[in-house]
Length: 106
Ligand code: HEC
Image (cartoon, rainbow, N blue to C red; front, side, top):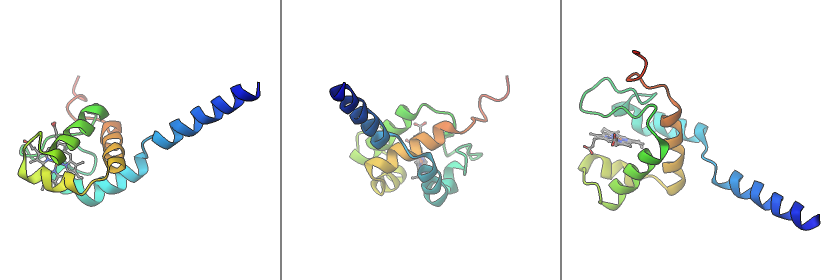
C-alpha cells in the first residue's frame, strides 16, 4: 500500500511538472506574439497565420522547427529563438485554448 501511494504521488508530481501553464503562455503571447498574431491568436492580417484553436502539438512543433531551422522563416526564427522549452509549451497551450475565428461560422 505504501508503494502504491508513492507511485501515485510520483505520477501526480510528474504531471504537475509537465502541465503547460496557460496563464504564463497568455502573458508571453500578449507581450511578444500579439502584434502579429493577435492577442487571442485570431490575426486579421493575411500575412500572419491564425493560431487560435490550433492543436497544441502542431504549434509547439512549428516553434521548435523555427528555432532549429528545420522550418525556415526569418521572422519566426527570431521570435522562436527567445522561447524556452517551457515557453513553447505554454504559448502553444494558450493559443490552442482560444476560440478560432475560422470555426465560428458554421
Ligand atoms: C513580427 C510578426 C510576428 C511575431 C511578433 C510573431 N510571429 Fe509567428 N509568424 C509570423 C509569420 C510571418 C509567420 C508565417 C511564417 C511561415 O511562413 O512559416 C508566423 C508563423 C507562426 C507559426 C506557424 C503557424 C502555422 O500555421 O504553421 C506559429 C506557431 C507562430 N508563428 C507562433 C508565434 C508565437 C508563439 C509568437 C510569439 C512568441 C510569434 N509567433 C510571434 C509572424 C510573427
